[in-house]
Image (cartoon, rainbow, N blue to C red; front, side, top):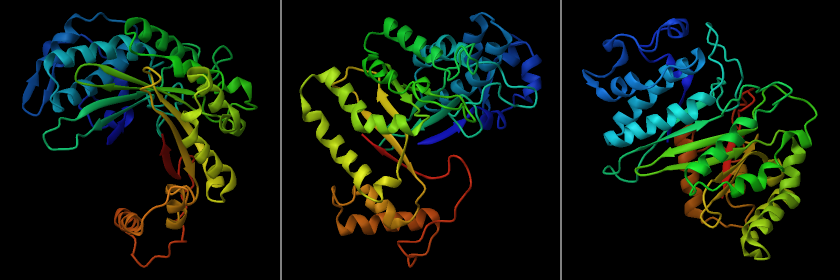
Length: 356
């Protein structure tokens, strides 16, 4: 999957500087309103932008920037024209109004989102198919930013995401917020947070722009270690029982993971980063736990992948993991399995694992 952020793309387009975008009218001349893909002009941006109403300077800015990015990706991914229009309208009406204030003339965001390392509130990604014949699909990961985000009224920027979930469910009942609401209280930073920290993010969403529908995902960011501890000790089990009743078969895999995290030395180094859910009927939804570890040795990684031997790996699998590890990082095959990589001092530097 290939990803990029708003500010990364901003530097690689012909839109000019941030100051230029902020002061230029959105509905300019016909040439300004179109988008060039190589030597060909795609009509989608020109036509849809002609009729959509102007809004305030912040929303017009985000639409000018991210709308152009999105229409380029939809075009290059081969989306049918009708689908391009629908995805752009979804972006215009659902995402753009909830992207917060435009950045300053120097490019600094008004609200620092934990969504990306450069604090932009949106990340684009391409999801490639399994074969050359499969067309890629576009995914947008977003932190919806409300008007009071970062203030005492909405310190951890939750209101806008909660609002949009209700709106999406009303528009499309197949977008089911049951799991979202089941975990909303457990991951409320107000329950445990003692200090705001360097950023105010606590909820994210993602939108997979499929061939015939838009799949919605939600992500909870635990801002306090006690939130993670409560989740593994009783929060997850309570949420499962609230949805499934006394059927405990859904808990078996989770109990194996929880045992590894609490009793194994390698498991104890893992820290919960994000909880992700599919916003669909609970029996179809996946629940993903994103975890991070400061350890970077191959032996540490293999222990995590095998859950400390609870999910044994064959020797062939271990050899393939080592081959991939060394090839990806440019390491010598003779490197010790117990050697850590050189440490990078950054808040998000670590290895990430996903369980579901």
